[in-house]
Image (cartoon, rainbow, N blue to C red; front, side, top):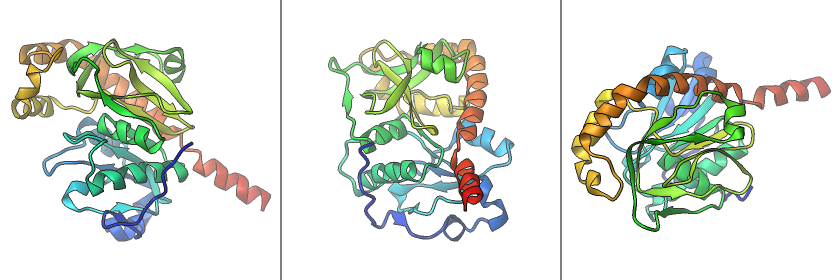
Length: 270
């Protein structure tokens, strides 16, 4: 894997997870690092599901100056969510996050990138993130096509999925394609045993979707974007399957952690 070296900066913390977040040590193994990109951003249903399973969320917002933890030993996973910025932006925190994605891969922590987070993961692996050649956007509900590998990982993917983006990613070297779509082909992929990237948004609550429709209403005028009524009607038709898939996917994702197996094997051979 072509990983960029992690460079220390104001956005990267050399504190342990407990020191940086103030979380009690006895709960450290049930902690998920959550990276958000706006003051009012929420981890949505991903956060709700994780908390329902007993996990604590260590939320960091790099655009607001929050550092990212280097020592991920006591984290159960890391999730990088979406945002209005681009993985191609020159902001220092964007470069730091891309490097941090590569750092997560090196530490073999279960990693999930959503939309911008997936694009940052691709950049960390040396891949490219680009706009559609005809300037199309996926904003609304669009067909999703799981690959054979995707169905082997998890059956019963949603046939329609919620999208909000105008840039897409290429499949990184060493990645396994899990799902495709029509306008932006690469939609979900896996790298190694426990790193995943998805272009689509299964984390949105209804309140989040309605907020996006108000604050991002100018995006609805982009080519191939759907109008407001189609978003609301689509949610009524497709959200049940999306919610079911998300819970099953997160279960598979967390179970992909191989670090404990390595530690057990090392102890046995010591």
